[in-house]
Length: 192
Length: 186
Image (cartoon, rainbow over all chains, first blue to last red; front, side, top):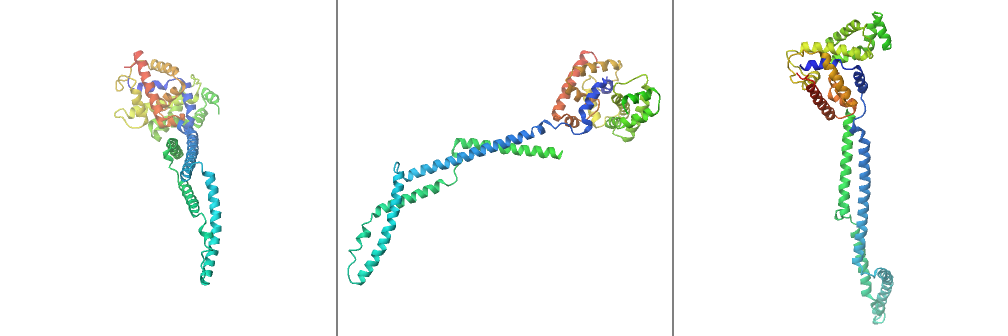
């Protein structure tokens, strides 16, 4: 027996098998899309979902990290338990700072005037010098520190420091890879 | 025209039967011949011979599937011509590859032509196909009857080429085993 014997024997198989094969062929027209192509919408959806959620988590982690760092920085800048009181002090100090300054200017004018008049200005000056200068400085220092801390906290957060962020970054990368794979598959099938 | 009417024309010995057959199934038979011979002239000759064979066969034959009936005749004629043209050397192409694959099922694919009754082998093949799952059978028939390319089968059935290849390989192994059991491998 040779290969042609089998080929000729195949010729006599039941006609219903031929009809069955014919029906499956769609007469050469494109048939059912391939398994991969059928999975394409699913791949796209999965990629989008992964990207959406990992992006959301990443953003959440990042925001959380910022707020945590901000809180830590503020706590560092201001002694614990003194938060509200310090703020009030800062405001009060700032208010006080404006008034003495105006008084100081007036006193200086007085001094100049009195010096010109040949009298001493010692009587007018104590109003200014008696103001609590160290408190002012402390309030300003605190305010400055708080401002610096706020600015530092608003810098881009280092998301990699959080284990969740690392995991989410991997998830995000997987989403990107999935999306690229889906796009490549789509382009390949479109070309076909 | 319906198949039954065409068959009736053959039975009435009306020459219109050939014209109607050619009109309805000419393209189908040409595609079968073309896949095997890859020559327009040879294919046309085989299709013309098909109508003559059919004229000789009907009556008494009354085919259930006229399309398959004509297809078988065309395939048989085309294979005969292919065998004659390629007796000395093996050419490339899908038919040669498919025939080589079929040859794997027999112990001596290059051996002498088989002397046993071909109907016995056909019966074994029919039993073999009957036991197969539908998709596997379709792949087998499309490859070894229609000589379709693996990529065409994969595309039409919506499966990967590797799946088609693997299915064919398993089918051939099973067939070889059956032929061995039946003592038909030589």
